[in-house]
Structure formats: structure tokens, C-alpha cells
Length: 63
Image 1 (cartoon, rainbow, N blue to C red):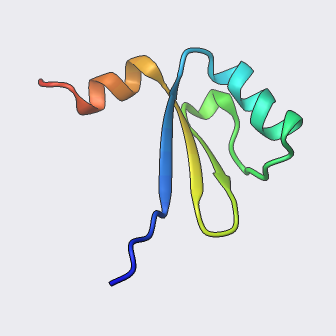
Image 2: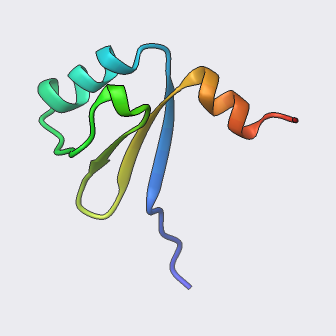
């Protein structure tokens, strides 16, 4: 079996600033905006997700 990645999620401190960098600076396509809480950028094969640090920590931390 060949290993594959389909999504990479990055925790970011400022979703708006990170959105601007990836969407406007690098030109990655997306249909979402920072006010939706998470951003997905579709590349050829891998989706890059941007998610606020606090929300990511809540998702992976103990309850």
C-alpha cells in the first residue's frame, strides 16, 4: 500500500492574516473565509486546512 496524505491541518494564531498569506500571497484556491472558522485550500492531491490554535487544542486535548 502506498502512503498518501489527503489533508494537513495547521494551527494558526491569526486566521485572517494566515488566510491572506495563503490565498492572496500564494494564490491557493479556496471557497471559505475566516469568518467561517476554518479555511480549506485545495491543491493537487492534498487539502491544506487552517484552524485557530485554540480550537485545534480543544479538539485534540482531554475533555
